Image (cartoon, rainbow, N blue to C red; front, side, top):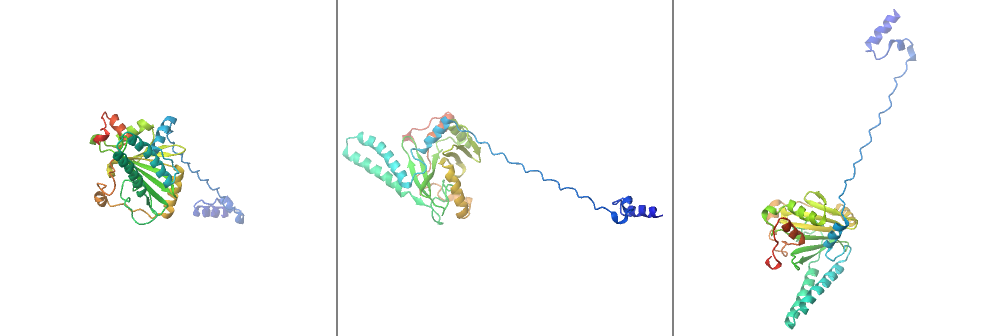
Length: 301
């Protein structure tokens, strides 16, 4: 009779405890705990493989420095610019015996140096600057130790603008604005630009309308600004300083507000408050040649 009661009790408990264990009264064993299952190790993301730059293409990219060196002070940049003008204007002065013409050339040279000096602007303020809505609007931040010089390069068949960006008083980036107005509308696109750039500088890492070449000493970015400013650009920068600049911007600079598209469409659309941003260099000529065209002569631009 007792055995029947034991079996009946086991059935009432749903079979969770075996009848033979109940037969021992208080000698029941606690259920054995299973060891916790170890979590699967997190998968490590593989670092993105960057395109290698050949020695030949690195040399070609280095020429984009235009005779200036990253790390220069503002005064050193102006001194190099003045020396470059000496070489260019000396040839013109020697080519004429007209005293009046020689004086005019010397005056033109001084004016170019003065213009570069006068273009200096410090962004060490939270107040808006004339450059906040411009082709370089994404290249600087306010109140982060940054400043800029701007030069219009329109000699030797070129018609481009070079922006010198300083961080804590040292040149860390140059931004060259290129003009594509001479390109046919059906060839004015990123694909044609990429073909020209990679034809001259080799394959780069392409992402979001940019082509990037990375070396140990400097990085170069080719940037598509066609939709916003009908222009293309190239930036040369020190990647080590870039990391420091980004950290400073994140720590000190307030969030930048996106300019309303309607406002951007009417603000400085013809860039009348600055020299012409439509500019050109050998890279753009390369685009034209690649598409079977012939670039205009300097006097025809």
